[in-house]
Image (tube, rainbow, N blue to C red; front, side, top):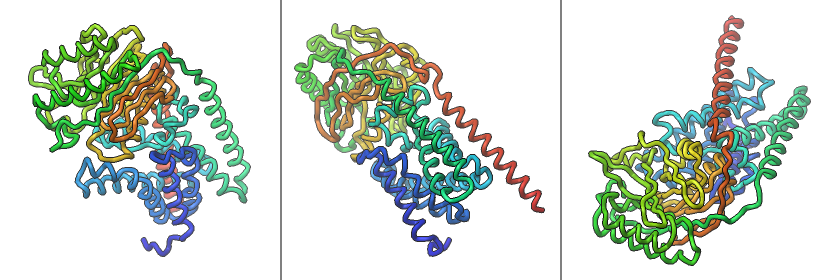
Length: 494
């Protein structure tokens, strides 16, 4: 492809779309830009030939994908692999935009809806199919993690509903502009009015469904900013637990926990440090004694060795110093697998009754997927406590993107969440996604806040990703119809 053939205005519009999308995400968080970010690109590629569409879409995707991923991908993978993965996925999404442009030519009456259907279904499948679900990538919904009224849509659709409606609004605006002076303007404008009314209804629903916050439960999250293994930062999964590492980690957590007494916490959450074995009676007694002295529930993260297996495990001590809940991590990372950890498949999703409501536990990467929190909520959990390790990324962007997952899980299932990360972001959120307290990044802090619980089970908790599966079915129907129509058109041309 000769880049000289690409109009400078179209090129500028594609780059502008990428920049607007970046600005809508952390750390900038100008979230309203996501609702118009695709408009310049869609205007630029309208009626372009396929090669130009693909190149303009590629420029847009690379402008967005590379800055958003490369800073933390390079901490996980070799630089060459980080670049290859980032660029490869960007070009894959460019291919998706190319397919959408071809479909719009075949189905002009559906041009407002094709991109939302294709993109949302692709995101959902990518995040749920084997192998690709472990390729941690941002989705458009991450841009809205602070938009409380919009977030309430997730109680029905899950997180992918937000992605769908972001693209729907972008498409409606873009094709109203594109068709302003032609015969299809009236039809497109009517569709845009409908989309606008839907957006207003979603916003109103969200705004009206958020009650005034109450302060029934006091939670403290301990962000220790402490690495037990300075020679291999963030690599606890492949390190052997040593007496010195266990002692150092416990000392830091104990000191910060005692300092949190001023907040009179009902629950204290420690980070994902995996610093001691569950069968180490001496340290279990120490944590139990600490819980008694604080008159609080204390959640710690340990290794549970069972036979030849070992599990990344969260345990909850009662104010009486007894272990009242245990949870084995369900979604483990590549590093954990390399270190000999296994994912839990048998113990289910235990929930424990406490004086302050029903509590469930999960661990770090679990919150990136919807199943763990949803299953805990189905088992009546009202408060979720989560230890997290984000220490191995060295990025200020990644912790904010990762923190947004906790907000999504809270709103989808109407649960409060207390989350403690090694280096941040640690946070406390209520069942409506309002952040009660949060930390900085790479700081040692005590995060304290008061939240509440509700007994509500949302549509999403009860029925799961019904909306997303419906979108996938629609995408399959669109693609099938497109292939059939294209083949039929070629036959008629002969």
